[in-house]
Amino acid sequence: MRAAYRAARGLRPTLITLLALGLSGCLMRPRPTRTPPAAAHEARPSAHLGRPYRVVPARSRLIILVYRAGALAALGHNHIIACRCVSGTFDVPHDVLATTFTLSIAVGQFTVDDARLRAAEHSAAFPPDVPQSARRGTRHNMLSAAVLDAQAFPDIEIRSAGLQRAPARTGSEVRARVQIGLRGQTHLITLPVHYRLSGDELAARGVFSLEQTSLGLKPFSVLLGALRVKNQLTVRFDLVAVPASAARAVASPVRPRSSAAARRPPR
Image (cartoon, rainbow, N blue to C red):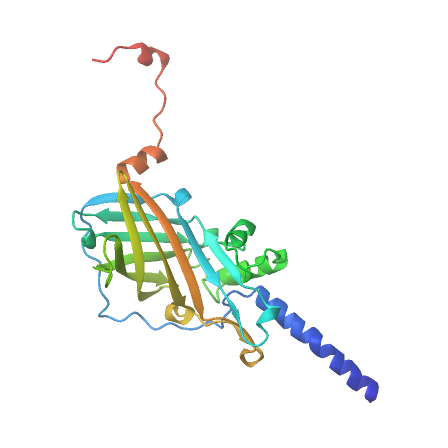
């Protein structure tokens, strides 16, 4: 009996370690939940007016910081989710506050814990030594049917629902009301945006906190909450857009003319 008791006690650290490894690859690993439909009184985006600018995905980036929590948090990992997968259009009229935008995020392009991004955080909260198995597990769970359901909903859609000048701010900061289409449901949030119009380029960036539950997601939790994923995320975005005509020219390069055409003098 004593030998069996000692063996059972020896298993406890192993079980806790296995649970911790599950959390390290668990980004927001919730039970599937049903999200209520968006409220009928939500604001609708206004008509597209002004000059159209198209987002350049290769020059834009989205970063999401996901944090561990609970008494056993040291057994898990914080994660950095990122991508250059934002596309869409800004329509900018003379009155900047009348700007509208429609954006799309291709969730299948999300990366997890890129070593360069973790190093760029310059923070002990994001050490570089995240096991490959944890990165793969986190990405798998994030795209699974229980979380983003990437197979059924490959894109997150974002639409403007009105801009306001930020309180006690001047210049180029606004508060954007946006509709987020996620897993077939729409959620309304407000976020800060710093913008810059310079020549033929529009830049928009911002940092804000976002709770998973506000998007209908349930943070993963085990051991009665002793090991869990924190509900609050940190989201950073840095978008660059150019006039739509310029974006089309880059996407569709002009074919070279034949040598005869090149020699022909202009009319």
